[in-house]
Length: 467
Image 1: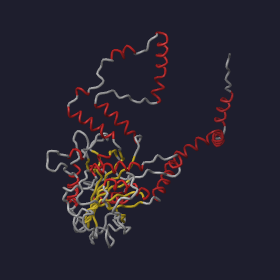
Image 2: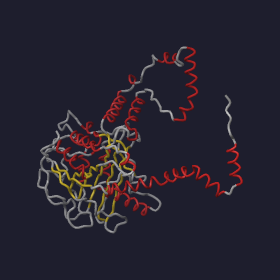
Image 3: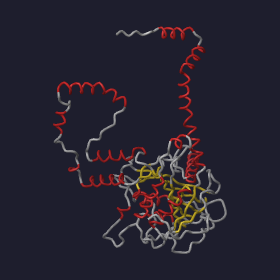
Image 4: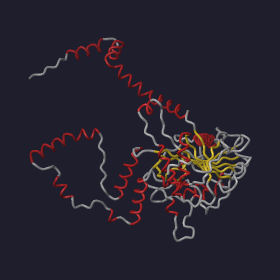
């Protein structure tokens, strides 16, 4: 059978593009398939802008609320209770369908766990989308039946939005991981338990609350921990963590081949199959037999401390994880501004969670922190202050540093209600009559800061609590 190719069309086309005017060539190419190429180029160029606009519209219509949470003064619950709260909130995770993902601009919900201090008046706050209010309240009441949850106005809406400002100065930053390997955990509340001591649990949040209690008249300081429920496929964190464990114990980690490498190895695979069929044994079988006596890993030869680290990594990736961002600001009137009153204390409080050969938290001053040393110092510092305060007001997950992985145990270590042994003054609780916030607050509007939206304070769990 003989196959003949007709080259006449190719000859005609080459002659056509040689002698025809460029306009005719472009029209011909466009009609005969070029429009499809042009469509994909235009679609690829404009799709990100369209998707961004849809996402902005979706986020703009979400009704956000702030919930002030007060618990009894004699709280004896450890951070384990708050760990269960975070686990409960993971139920807000949702995988969008195609319509939501590509047309509606759907974005996964996230929560902001905040600790604020207004002139030393400390309050624990949770910001959430309104439809998740029942989820948040149920998770809290399940662990703290006597808690009081009150919806309040957004205390940030009258913060200055631009710097320099005639009345206020700002200092702040975001806290990032000391080790870029996110599978390595920070120190958690379980490491602060001392069974031999009179006080079994040395609450690490005591240092932060003590620092927050030191702000005075005309000062504000606030901490945000933004958390987004994620699946195991988010940035492949679960699979990556398992690979990190295998690497630590000396086991071989199978690397994924790219499509090009797979195509390049195809001839070799065909040759191996042919040899196996002819010779009657598998290529490489002898090599496998020679390696069967090799130790599966180096686990038996690792030092004790390294084994503990492996267990910590395994524990981290075995629990529910969230995409996390931590942001802190200090805002005060110019006549009382003193950043040293809080900045060193907040960073020191976070240093408690650092493990030198694992992970920890550090302030990010390279591009986010409001502390510039050279070249247009005042201008650049004002830019950073403006960007940071607006990110704080919006509870933005996109402005600033990249998000990183933290599990529920780590988050509960950073944000939990103080135990009975914590003596920081003016922490809001249900054990005493709740008074009005201070009159002189670091905002430009008269009146109190934590003004309730509703007068009714929920003092008992709902009757149909799902427990």
